[in-house]
Every structure is written in C-alpha cells, then in structure tokens.
Amino acid sequence: MVEVRLSTEADADILDILTRTYADFGGDALLRYEFLIVTALSDLAVSNWRNGAMTRPELGLGVHSYHLRNSRDRARH
Picture 1 (cartoon, rainbow, N blue to C red):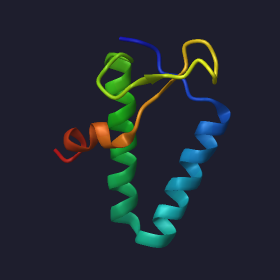
Picture 2: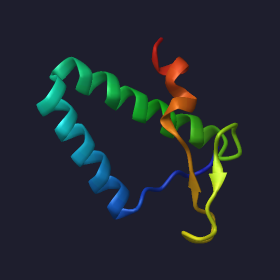
Picture 3: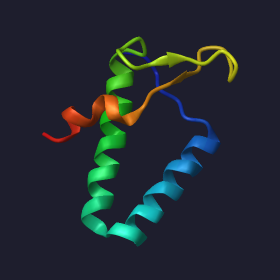
Picture 4: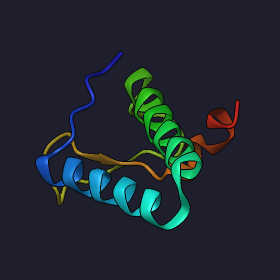
C-alpha cells in the first residue's frame, strides 16, 4: 500500500465539489459522489501505478492524477 496525501487545495476542492453536489442534487447524490471519491483514493492507496494513474512531474515529485471514472464501476457495488 502507498500513502495517499492530498494537498490543501485538493482537500478544499473536494469539499467545494461535495457542497455544490449536495446543494444542486441532494443528499443521495452527495453520498454516491463521496463514495466514488473514497473508492478512487482507496484504489490509489493499493497502487499508484494502477490503470489510469498519471505521473505529474510538473506538479511535483511523486505527484499523480487519477480520473474518478477509473473507479466508477467499483463504486457502484
């Protein structure tokens, strides 16, 4: 397992996204989206070299990005 750390900016972005999701789509959508984000972070903790993870050296040493769509199927269960 690898350590997944989020920047302060990423934490703030996630909070903003979840707040807007709740305001626009309600509590059920908030829970689904939150579960998707947690699933994606858990998937990355297993391996940051998983399919869909991209190294981002322009953002810093050891920084990766990962699109949530890569964990969507696992979050549905």
